Image 1 (tube, rainbow, N blue to C red):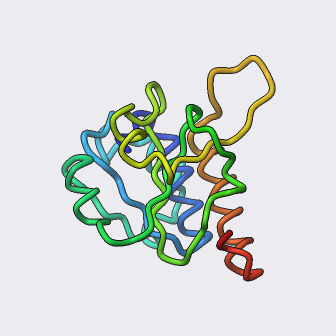
Image 2: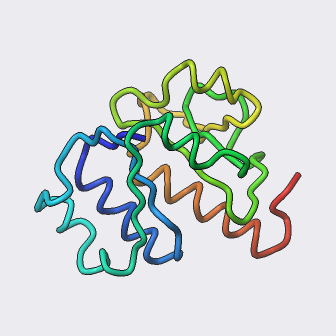
Length: 148
């Protein structure tokens, strides 16, 4: 949701290319999509990624309505390993500096999960968090253990 740092978005785009995942970008973005850092981080994989732009979070929520939606926030009480991964689920992450808005977490409380951290850090890098969650989802779906 509303990514602010071009290299993070480029890294996530490369991850999407590697996993054949669709990348949904919720505006406003913290950069222009022709940013050289964005292009550099995505390397030459941009033509292998389906990118869908949404005007704002409400447009994204309308678009994803009726499909599984999993939200990831450091403020969520349950770990990402308890998420009910399902083919076609939308994975929603917050912006780098603020995370997901509290109203959204409250609205989707039963679908919110976190990545545990034990050190003295505020948060993980966004593209690292996305990688952890995406590969856990694929692992569970591919082994038939997607749902709890």
